[in-house]
Image 1 (cartoon, rainbow, N blue to C red):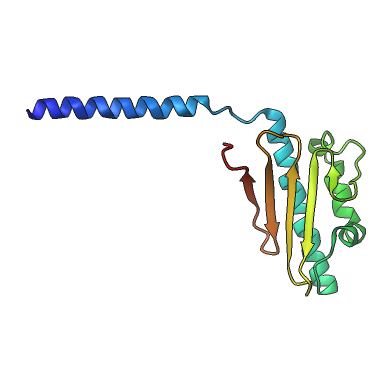
Image 2: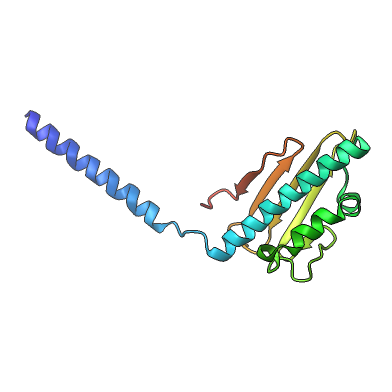
Length: 150
């Protein structure tokens, strides 16, 4: 009797592992282009976080996109000049919100007291599974995807 239970349990474990591995096999890995786009967006968030903290220390307030770009032009020029990001920013210039780079919409909200901000660049190229990154005055970067997307 004990031997039957062990065989049954072993069979159930194998069945469970087979189901789990077949589900993982169906998940498509991110394409190199999507990974490059995401790396560019993360680098942009780091650049914006740096520029925001420079503005906070200089002007005692975080800044809107327009003011931030004018105050910290050198940071954004250095970012755009990096070879890795040139494909994402063809003319080495940022556009006006919402689309600051091809396929990237930016939402930057500075709190009314100027002591905080919320920043979200959204990748608009993948209509099936949209994704976005988030950061704020804590300078932590989060990634999000639409529900149901892996």
